[in-house]
Amino acid sequence: MPDPLAPDADLEQIAAWLREARHVTVLTGAGISTESGIPDFRGPQGVWTKNPAAEKTATLQYYVADPEIRRQAWQNRLNSEMWSAEPNDAHRALVDLEQRDALHGLVTQNVDGLHLAAGQSPEVIVEIHGNVREAKCIACGWRGPMQETLDRVRAGEDDPACLHCGGILKSATISFGENLVPEDLDRSQLMAGRADVFLAIGTSLGVYPAAGLPEVALRNNARLVILNAEETPFDPLAAAVVRGRLGEVLPAIANLV
Ligand code: NAD
Image (cartoon, rainbow, N blue to C red; front, top):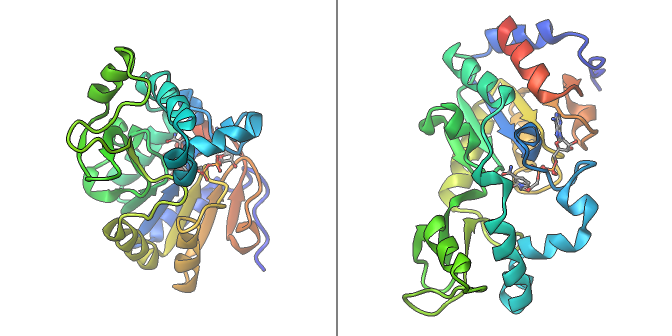
């Protein structure tokens, strides 16, 4: 098993791998957006770490079965930090890497749209868990701008129903218990399989199928580099692990490429 690099020990080595690589694929998780003021789920300040019951609002089975969970979920959406959040230095460093031809695919588990807002090219991004900009009906498949549905919540509808079929509305994100969009999963797996360097950034690598992507990359002999504040189950398989703050670590690496 490779020895992980000591924290922050050799960012130059990582930069050299990125310079030499023909195809670099990145997987990001909630940890890249905490410095933009959006809490992650499982980190020390995570939403679920502080309040385990909150997981139910992100689980389809509970959301469909319980109007009280839906009312809570709509209040969470209304008051979400995501509406005012701005990209941070870590998001911008990934844009730099793309401009330096050292990032070719970016799969994000995040639903906050901050990679796009930072200026990453839409063609390189797969938002594998969807995004919060749209609402969708789980019965008829209608989709529309999230803010229009949030206006209905602000006006007093605490669990707005689909205006077309009366079905249950939710954000157009993938909840637990909900299938991924097959084309998005296919594109992600292609990107992972093509990588000679695979960077896993700000993710606890605990949620499948997204956590299966480093497995695909490793099977195809990619170097796995993990940038995350806490341990992940993939650390023993990584060529390098760096535990610093992403807003510092990623710009430092990008500047060395
Ligand atoms: P996670 O909450 O399981 O893990 C985040 C990891 O990032 C943690 O291990 C934490 O230690 C690390 N981290 C946090 N801030 C960091 C920083 N500044 N520097 C370095 N590391 C840092 O997140 P996940 O694996 O992405 O899974 C959570 C799921 O929840 C995902 O499916 C995602 O869709 C969703 N989610 C999205 C958002 C968002 O869009 N911003 C926010 C919360 C949750």
